[in-house]
Amino acid sequence: MSSGENQQRYDEIMRKISGRRPFGEKARAEPRVTPHGRALDMVNAYDSFARLTQDRYAKILCHGPKALHGKAWAGVVVWYRQKGYHGYQKLSLFGVWARHADDELLLSVGIRKLSYRAPIFDAGVYRVAIENGFRLYYEDDGQPPGTEDKLLYQSSFDAKKRLAHRQALADILREWRRNAGTA
Image 1 (cartoon, helix red, strand yellow):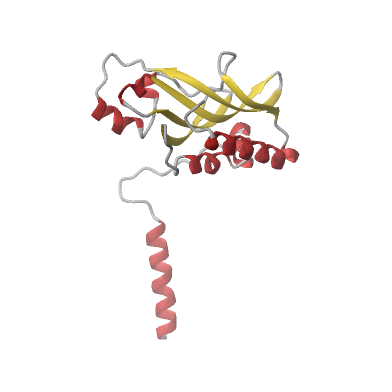
Image 2 (cartoon, rainbow, N blue to C red):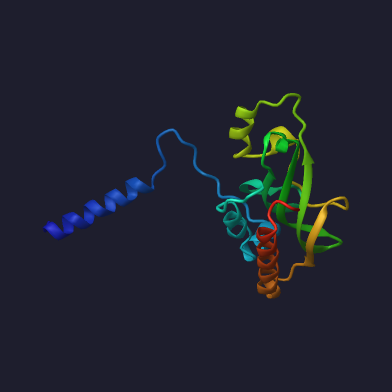
């Protein structure tokens, strides 16, 4: 074998080794793509909300995003609270959800308010845990907004109109960022 062939063989072996899963690790299951998840992907929901958490805000602390799903819905949310010691008492979920209603796929953007539900409050533990999720302290699964929540946008999802949905989402996020902490 020539040195070029040896190098090609070496590169091929290294590529195969790097593609293998570590010993003892279970094979990764590919996530099942649902119509809800596909709709959120088409409007670039996750990346749009991820940009919100990269900024610093004067009045709020913002965390996330997190992709969530239920039986007939999927969503991408960020969660935020007022700064200060007592800010933990109310948490806001700001997100976009795709769900089925009346035989159509709806795209909704809204804000849900959650009350603190844990029996005690430990600021140090809370500060670390809230960065990773809100379920532990607020006992909520991140479901789509209901009648008592603030609905900012709702439209029947049509893949052909995905750019219009993306623009509407971008406008809402820009407005939220401008007024961060007052909603």
